[in-house]
Length: 395
Image (cartoon, rainbow, N blue to C red; front, side, top):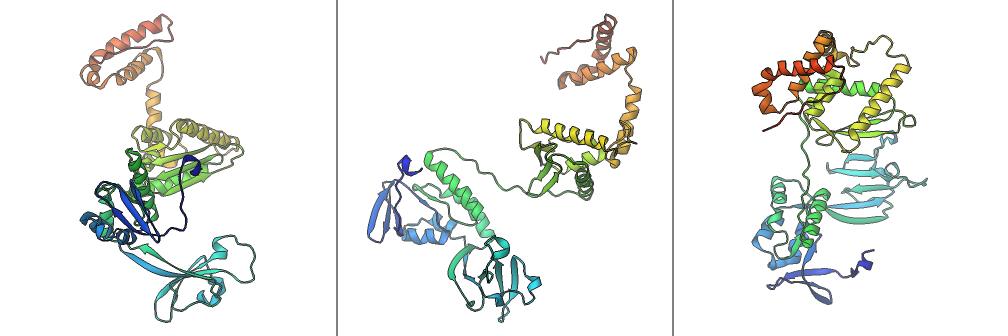
C-alpha cells in the first residue's frame, strides 16, 4: 500500500554512516552507495545511532543518547531439556535456573507459550546459558536497555534533539518508548503537533479505600450475572465482572480515576455511584453510550436477581450493599419527612429550584427567594397545573 503512495523501498542496503550537511540535507552512506535526503529517521538503538553519526554527532545528541546503556544477551533456540528443571512437573512457560558458575539464566518453554502442534521433542529458548545447548537450531544476540536514572532523565530530554538537523530518533529504550518517539517523528516530519500520553501512576488507596475496593469488587462479582462490567484503574489494574453475554451482550469499561470511587459506593451504594460520577471519580471509555449502557446492565441484573428470588426479603429502601445500610436508613427517614402532601410539595419543589440556581445567586438570595418560589408553586398546584418551570438570569 505504501508503494502505491509513491514510497520507494531499498532492501539489502546496510547503512554505515549518516552525515548531516550544513544546508539541511542528510547524506546516507553504505557499502557501495551514497545518497542525499531532506531528512532521516533513525529507528535504531541509541548506541547504534551514535555510531552512525560518528564525529558528526552534536554535544546534545551525544549527551542524551549516551545516557542509554545496553546489555547484550546470547539467545539459543534448541531442544535440550537439561536446561529445564530436573523435575518435569515443575516445568513452566518461564524457568529461572542457576548455572554451574552460580549465574542465573532463563529458559522459555515454547510449547507452553505458543501452540506449535505436537512434537517429538519440546522446543526451548534459553537466554545466556553457561554452555551451548545440545540440538541448537538457531543462535542470535540482541541488546536490551538497562533501566537507570540517567536513562529516565534522558528520555524526557529527547525533544531537545528531535528534528534539530532534520534527524529524528525513535529506536532508543523500551518498546513503548520507541512507539512514542516514532509518533513524535512522524508528526514532526508532517509539521503537526503531537501529544503523547504518559504512563499514569498507579493509584495509592488508603487502608479504608483498599477495604472499600475489596467490598465493592466482591459485590460486583456476585451481582453481575448478565453483561460485562470492567473497572480500569489509572496505572493499569483491571477488574472484570462478566455474566451471561447471551441474555445481555452489553459491555462497558469504567475508568477509575480516584480510589474514592470505591469508598463512595461502599458507603452509599447506588447513590454513592452517582456521587462518584458527579465528582469525576470515574468516567467511561465509551463517552457517548457508556452511562446509558451502565444503567441497562444494572437494571437487567436487578431484574434477573428479583426473578431468581434472591431479593424476596429486600424492601425498596434497603441497599444491595450491606455496608450502605446506615446511609440508606438516613435517606429513608428523609424521604418520610418529605412526603408529597400539598403543603410539603411546595417546600420540596422550592428546595430543588433554589438548589438549581446559579451559585452566585444561591449564596446571596436563596433564603429570600424560597418563600416566593413556594407561593408560585402553590398557585400552580391550586390551579391544577402539573407542569411549570423557573428561569433565573445569571446577570
